[in-house]
Length: 357
Image 1 (cartoon, rainbow, N blue to C red):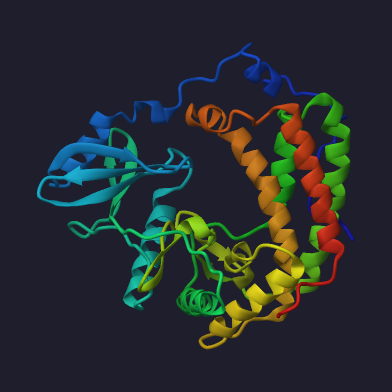
Image 2 (image 1 turned 180 degrees about the vertical axis):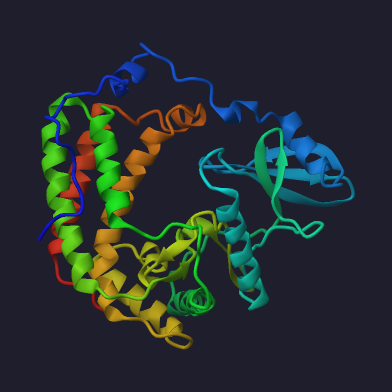
């Protein structure tokens, strides 16, 4: 089998002339240049809100978001709104508009997704060089999903999202790629010097084996249906009320297999995950068919998320919010644990496919 990925042709520990080793950054020998989000001051947030004809009362609450910046902004005589400022350079305007269009398609199908506020036929605006949109505030709690009824409820909504997703194709959004999530991520970490030198060889050898097995599992699951997805359907992007779940943050919506929107809702032992999966698919099957071959991808997708998460932190380290929020990142013990976790994932991928309980 000819691999579609490469870790590096350079020996472990070698660096290109333009690379600033991660150790130099963490030790304070060099300082990253000022990040664009430094310019996103409270005054800019209020200016952006009032440019839409909304009267801010000056209250701004930063919400839990690192990739973008998200704020709850109080209004005079009205419910607060949520303003989302996109990370400069991450998405093109057409890609952002596809995110918004997908949200409106879902709400038109009476699926509880929080869509941006439209004003003058537009949903995307610009202020001081930042693209942003505004959402109505929606409350709720994280889903516990500790009972079969709640899991089936989630399954029904995910199936309905996928039915809408299958009607059209994204033109500007990404397609899920194990090469990008795994191969590109690991290569970035190695070539940019983020691994402690005494762990580089072990990491490089491990990810080579991991990616070979991941490629094999994707080949075994093929051909699988590719469709528009939520893309990042973890508990933090689902809010629960007495009326059931509603979905937020389509920032990572993409094209990919249906299981990408299912596996992040599973946790625990294999037996526990099998029961959770069975309950979820009981609801899912009321609206859409699920190809069980996609279950081959559950542990590979989990592994890829772990690999991509480490690279995401490294790529965002010039953003001042990241060193403050993740001070442990880059320490040798982080990488030691990361390698141990990836080794466990190699074993999990060799285990029998998750059964439907």
